[in-house]
Length: 113
Image (cartoon, rainbow, N blue to C red; front, side, top):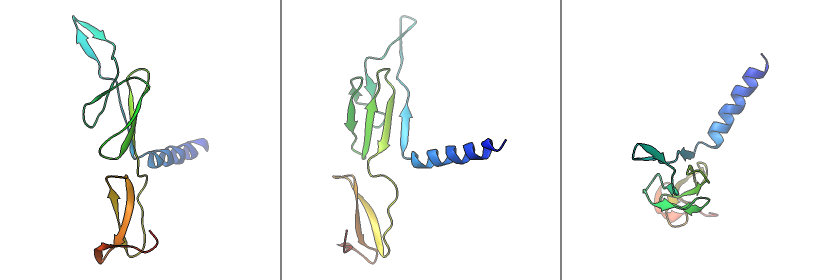
């Protein structure tokens, strides 16, 4: 029974570490009453199609991977929340990285960032 609390903590830690990821199951279609195997993956954000075993970046800063069965895994490209004292973190949509600006003057970048 001592293993249960350890497993619980481990599962919570994994969930927090991978909290910025999602998994989308294959999109199955039915034709003539039969399930048709997918011929690729569908991006869960914009609906675009991608070949099996491919990887792509989305417009909203996610990197997605299509496995051999049509399942899509997408994770945030900019990682976890960033904090800098006296600064505000803003995600740059071009680079999918954090940019830091002074909290009292959002037009001024924080020194050292």
